[in-house]
Length: 379
Image (cartoon, rainbow, N blue to C red):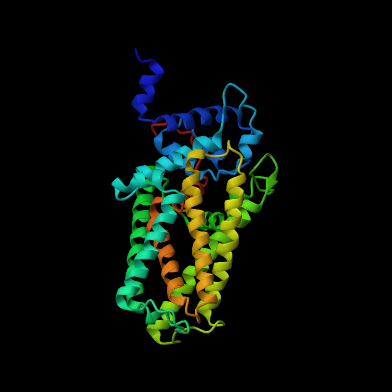
């Protein structure tokens, strides 16, 4: 016979991992020791119970810094076995899966690992090399950096623009579904400014005390925040380089190959170095991460995304260095294959955490400006 607790949980429509977040948040709500650590705990304190939307919101508000685990008096070996980072991480993955668009592709989050990432990059690189052979453009004579002699600009823009726009559309629809379940109310200019600052500065990777996160043990470190900054701003600089090069082409500002000290090349070099340092550091930290931090089952997805970013940087910088040699065409096929693999996996991999976390931070910035009202799971 089902227990009363089981019937209540079934009526609330919560999965096992969501029930675990509800359980640990109820314990944390009674303790409040970690209230100053990050935004999760003051947001938690505004609630008496935790419904599905609350659980998904708090899970995405968590930055998995690990500080609360090492500070918790109810963590293992205590019988309560409270582990906030792990509980939140499992629900975050469910969030991405539940709100994915198209819905049938949500299961890709569980399969998107290092092997799939590298296999996709390899297959696409081989495909592009075969296209070059069929077009007669896989040449091993110097083309002096003229990429458009291999693939016309409009062809590249159509291929990669289509894939990138699909990725942004899929992520946009997913996070819109997530946002609609949260119903935080209208966003003021102050709330949007605060949320943007928290996203761009990675405020909550600094810990509530400003000394950083925990990684391998209970020692605090700011390296996770720093490597995230290198990665994020490296990615944005590379995107800016591509955008500027596109504008140069359409308005006839410069012809390819662009000189080294031109704006597209300088932006691309700076971005490539950022994507070399950041993902390398994040991979090193991921390999050394305490096993109780987060969900171990998600490590393949984490590492797949990190390695794709790293290989994107390595192949891009190699292409720049050897663009005046006979190796340029083959390097271009490899680099374009890796970039396309990165774009294809963006909506169904680790990249999603930045989008959903930004939405959760905006909700927190809105919510904290509202009058304090203790909410139940039904509100």
